[in-house]
Image 1: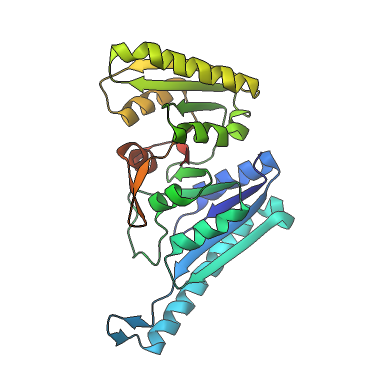
Image 2: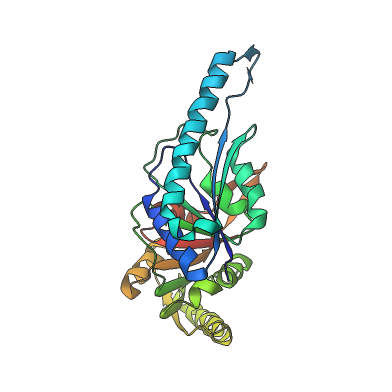
Length: 276
């Protein structure tokens, strides 16, 4: 059960879809909700020069004003949870992604949004969602800009026989128990791989049944890209949510995502629960 939801907002962004999903899930799970915004102040020293104090103070004033606006929108959207809503507006000296990762020690699930068309005002003003997902140590529910709500009645599990996917399915159990239909699908590239895929998905469905989730196994061999195939299956079953493992490798403290994870983050039309 998710007892504490953390909702990550960006400054000067459209929060409607994100907050609609967060408010709905907070009611379903009777959860506390923590809203968080993190933003890095202009450093006082850049290269070999000093930033004028007026610039530093102007930057702080602008950020604090935007954080205040974000807090108002957040509290209005979560008004039904009034006594169980908390706010963190963090002005940081380092990358804002680090600050959000650190705060996740006290939450069960992060709800965040990503917009592939959004501008990039600089690393200090935006959390790197790709980096965030890989470093959280908690599941992340990623809400696309086109989403209006999340009613988790039909859920598609994109199965791969990996540690990341096993963790994602375990992390998703509270949502899976709400669903009317769960499909566990493994997509392979060759017909010869289908028997193993059927075994994998069948065993996962048996495991889910022991945890109170009725699920259907599905194994397909397709020549399409994995995310294309997964999206086609999601369309076919009318999935509201895709559950998948998040993949990548570290690159001197940064994360380079695998193509599947990047595509799910940037191009999926549905909410995705991702876990690394």
